[in-house]
Length: 359
Image (tube, rainbow, N blue to C red; front, top):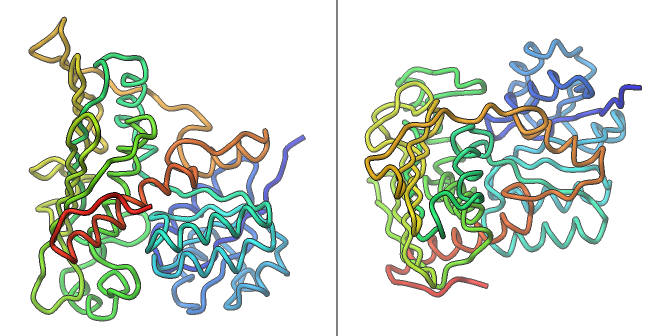
């Protein structure tokens, strides 16, 4: 018997909503039964893509929940509203898949965790880079001890900018970008905008995953201060661990988007261990491994990912169906460590000094 999971999508502030809903629609055991946003026009592309009837569109989230009786909520609000939305939804006890980053602050992250624990509501935070085969292959090799003990994580990632593409990586014109920029939440400080808050969470959350959950001791960060903008478009964070130093760099304004043509520097990770190194770049079909037996390095094909490890919907549904704990970067516990690093980096850049890891 097929276990049908009723899915709703609430808040289309983040363009990844369309991608996540499409994954739900393609899942053999899921059905998208409703979508909700305060601005109806933001839902129209998803409505057309999913062929949803007008009565499946809602502008009030309570009406959406009460009418659709969902088994899973996909949530994609502005970063600054993550805490508010999780507090609103958690009393309904419907599992929540929240699009990255975890929160705009560590205080919000803790509020979200507490609310979900109080009501017994499962919460998962989706980091799309988790589903990139190269990074999962790199994680497997690290866990197998291929490069010894991991000592350094080097991360560089970003894109041309958050307004250059909509759901499904559909590109828009430079003129549209400039028109939307002044009004976009991505460029608003109070909404959690900026390249640091957009992309650092990826690097430090997956970095923590690679490192087996270890936290740094202190953090130093700098960011650019572009004329006419409230937020940064480039940041560099240095995290000191008990065993060494790692570096995480975020960039809005790469020469090309990594999913079309890798820019230089390449987007992705370089992992340095006591017995070797691994370079794992976004969306590439091979990773490069350097070890004692091959000091010159060799290219290896990435693992072929099978269900339920291909996307967040597959993974979350599998956890719910089989009562498995949410682990890795999607778990609130590991994502919280990433949030600690992000918050410390934000304050470090703001105060222009090194800070101990915020607790």
